[in-house]
Amino acid sequence: MSAGLSLERSPVRATVLARVRLWPVVVWTAMGGWSAALFAVVRNDYDDFRLGRFDLGNMTQAVWSSAQGRPLEITEGTGDQIVRLGAHVDPILALLAPLWLAAPTPLTLAAAQIGATALGALPVFWLARHHLGSEKTGAVAALAYLMYPWVAWTSLDAMHPVTFAIPLFLYAIWFLDNDRLWAFAVCAVLILATGELMGIPIAGLGVWYWLRQGRRSVGLAIIAAGVAWTTICLTLIIPAARGDASPFYDRFASVGGSPGGLVRTAFTDPGAVLSAISSGRDLGYMTLLAVPTLGLFVLSPLLAAIALPQLFVNTLSESPPTTDPRAHYIAAVVPFLIAASILGLARIQAPVRRRATVPMLAAFAVLTLYLGPWLPMLETRSVGNHSAYPASHVRAMHDAAALVPSHVPVSATNRFGSRLSDRRYIYSVPVIQRAEWIVLDTWEPRLTRAGSTITHWEPVRFKAFWDGIEQSSAWVKVFERDGVVVYRKR
Image 1 (tube, one colour):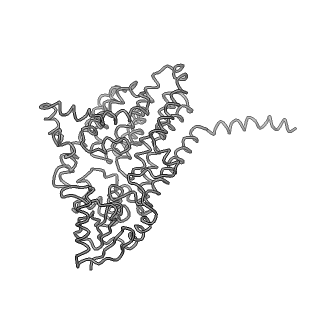
Image 2 (tube, rainbow, N blue to C red):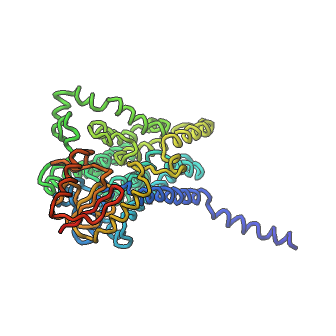
Image 3 (cartoon, helix red, strand yellow):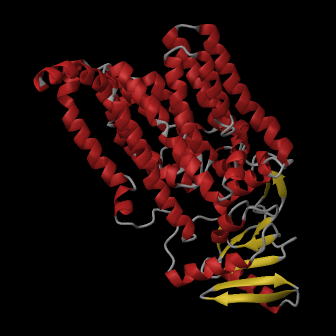
């Protein structure tokens, strides 16, 4: 009897098991675990004051201002009160205002960045499943995306609106690959909202779609939209919001200092351009981006080529972070290398692909562990941009930040910035202006310079500023412990 029942139930059991698709569950589980692990590291960095005004504080203020009815208003490093569009055209920050209202903490923004990046594993899974022929292979590709070192590093760099473009580009590629133009259009609009230069890779996708699907009119429309966005941002939106050209043009001073100057330099002194993009640092940067994909993207060169304009901009820049693969400047590079690697792998004959799978996975695993943040995370060390402070100093910083009333104007050193930026006026020392409180971490002698939007390590100027505040009758010291000092305006 029991044997009969067992035989009777086995088809039902088999049907249930068939409906439970193992590999999508694996992908979703990996996404959740990856997000939780990275968020734990970012939360640790935040609690220990390793995340500062630049850049988490900037984004916090822009989102907070949007939630208060002043879309994207920020205090620039120079002390000017501007709309963020005068620095970067990334209105996607305003869309995060509801999240802030639901959970008003900078960690909400960091979690949104990590969670959004994790969701990029889904289009990778779909692309690989479709082009490589199995859900198991798709799941392996999705796991490879999550373990790709630079995706993890940039997700930990809290936070940058352009990082949201990484998963959005992967969705855009998937939708174009399946001729789902309306879904692509939604992705494209969101991508454009992450930065002024994102129109160029969108235009590249238009070229790819035109040549891949043979639909010239649609491809040309995508190209036109992408080029128009970047042109309008650089020539109209930023100058209108700022009253001047982009503040970041000075990073390209050696090659013309502006898009027009770059074009002139390319014709009059092409050697300067070639020299700017072929330094040892630049070549090392490009190698580090390419090696984790095992170079498979070269088998799908048209899609991979969409990454070239952003690579060109990054290597032309004289700012060192632009050629750091851990930074957010990879947002318009990495999605195309990953998607092109999948499509390139599909061009290898299936028997060859199967024989090469084990050594490829072994090579990828070794590179991932060597280049990624995983070992520091396993050792419970921070992977933030700043070194760790002793526990006593961190406690002093927590106590100092707690003294400052909500929303009053304040001037502070960089590491206090992420904690104190949910207010209308947040200045970076030595800028004071409307400040009613000054909070100093004397272990971090960073100051803004005239005409600069970032801080620089200047201990002599910092000491002079600090001495001036100490001697001023306008300020009274209300806290001092372990190198942390707080002043209140009389």
